[in-house]
Image 1: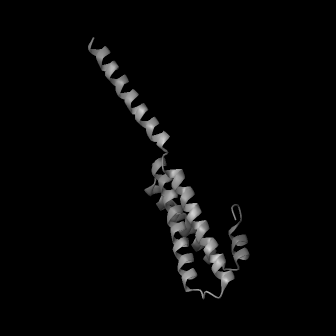
Image 2: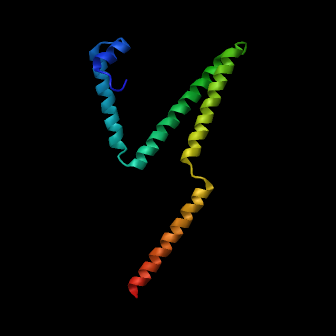
Length: 129
């Protein structure tokens, strides 16, 4: 509802304007607190992935718990829940692949670190000459 007025938001949600305003103010405070904790862009990036990871874990645990509680005769519900479990696991796998460096990335990082060390050694040797 980006760009909507407070009145429009309250009408759309069928709540009083004071409740909508309170929720918006609270949301802005929470966003400000999160950005204060994650000022560093890399930390902010990790924080966003951590939040996504946690949400998918919660959804997975919830779907699996409900799946185990549903009667085995209710095949359609169990199949639907099992599909949700699989989707959660697939999204977790995708997130893991995005935040975990590949073996090629690790090797490139080692090569770059080695080259930087060699450059520093050559620069120091040139300064001494």
